Length: 342
Image (cartoon, rainbow, N blue to C red; front, top):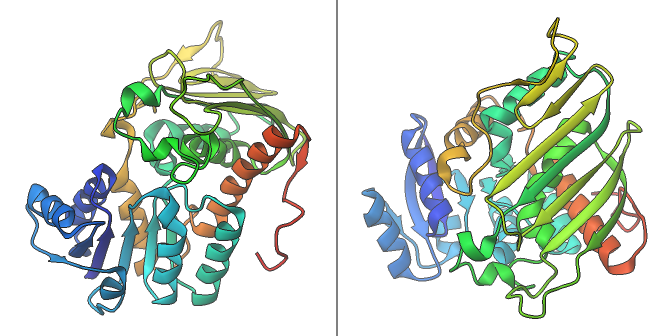
């Protein structure tokens, strides 16, 4: 039985708590939040019996805890996760895991040095549609990809009206780091590593509540020679959409519509019923599958495919896109200033 400490008392921490509570190999030992009252409220809301900590040091000193879920504000993720790694705790870290390259690489180095297990909450990797796409790719349904594109489109002003800290540079960082990182991670997972980006941000609305440009698009070149794009639009007038378009030499996938050489006699796209990542609520966020996966990784002493080392590459892609937007230059990956040890 693995003991779990939860850092944060917002919506996402509640989903983590539910997932751990449903796993037969974990139990919630305690919660830490910005205020003791907030942690107590989350504990009582979910009807669990656990300790409420007054500080992160207090949680890290508790030898009943083997796993820590970092569900705090984005600007705290890296520092809290580094302290957790140094304390020998396995880590589930909500994205983004860092808002600066220095913090990203420092976290990656600490995780490697202290050899703790990690999983980064790019939770769409466990979404049924994403799982289906990976199987189609592995089965050769699309052949060799030559174009891969993913879009994160979500009017956060409408869907998250109280999400004020995420619209600041300190709390959210950028459009790509705040939300578009899901799309950046998806293109890597489906099409492989990106080696070159050229990005642009739309002119910023002077009345925008964002401190950064919320609407960004980037052209990509992959190591395989394929091309594509990724976009993050946070002020769009549209229902939430996460588009996936993959074009190969033997098939095409446009969201859940497939045209493939595997489907003999096909004259048009076939629509596949599945759970699309098409809402900003919990219905398409499979936290249970993510947590169950991570617990198995710990018990079987193996690394997650979504660990910090892998997720750092998705974040580095986001930083490269932001750098290209700022400088107007084409940026090569991995970044030239990346430490050789990272």
